Length: 466
Image (cartoon, rainbow, N blue to C red):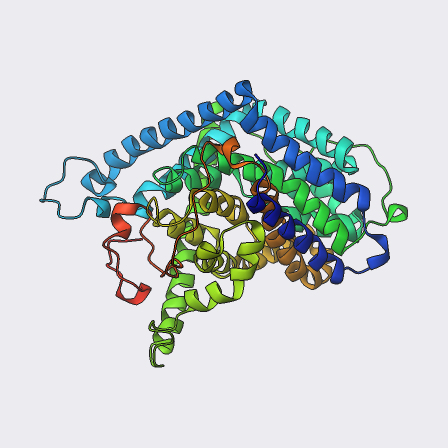
């Protein structure tokens, strides 16, 4: 049933497109057909994936596969790290079972396993066929040329820098609009390895978490294409059609070689994620320490999270979040932009069931599922400087705008989901709470049990929590 709350999400759709139009390099060339088509494609995909019994069952199967993958990964982690992996048999008496969930041992190893499996599936050509299939879909439905369409599809599964590798030889000849679109789409989506990690973080607080995360990354690609085309309109005269030649950057000698190289690639990703989280959380802790010198405001200490919650609360409301949850949801949006989406997912996973509305949690899952953050700016500059060094100056001039496009693309996706009937996702709307929910504090415990004992700030957080 379509309700007022669903109509509220339409504000977010208009707002995302409107901001991009105001900042467009040519406001007279707004892609009306692409705008209507992209939103309809997103809505149709959501309705089909969650409304059709066969596809809904397939998505639930994906969720079971993710649970099995996580359990299998824990067997390997327990073999190497023993009781530190959070096994039931602990050498000490437990006073806080939630502390067994340690991010380094429960989430990061999943990325290693998924990267190894992705390499194996690529060697078996299964993932390659899937990527090429999605590339044809993007080419036919979004009006993309063959090379950018393939790179867009690869980005959905492989990541923001790994995707363009598949058309490396074409990058120097891409138009400015096409190059900007690839960077923006890369920040609109997430990679296959991180999809599983996010689902692992949210599975205790969000039913069908894997289904939502997978859907979010796929349907955010059309949103990224649309907003990129609005900000930097295409120039057909600069897009010369040319046949697509397969790249040979990912070649494995055997299945074992694919597993070994995939594991090595995964290790680099894991170390990068861990290092980024350590540095960015530490920086926020330092800033919060400075804010702690100031007197409390409205009965609570000033923090980065509170400030972000206030700044982004109106945007969260425009996505379809009820106003009682808007400060918390706004804080999550800000944390995603400043501290990476990994941190934002961890903090949302720390909100226990009932802490925010179920509909709010679903909408925010889609809003957070993208690589658009400050750290990704550096990742893209470094990656594209290697892939296409002759265009580094041009990339430096557009990467921040691409980050904004990626951020708003996930907001557009969340708005489309918010406009869908809540019954589609298996929950009913609840009446608004009588009082606003407290602004989310920067605890990093990724499950409800851990959240209940976490301290109210990063600086006072126990060392055992990620």
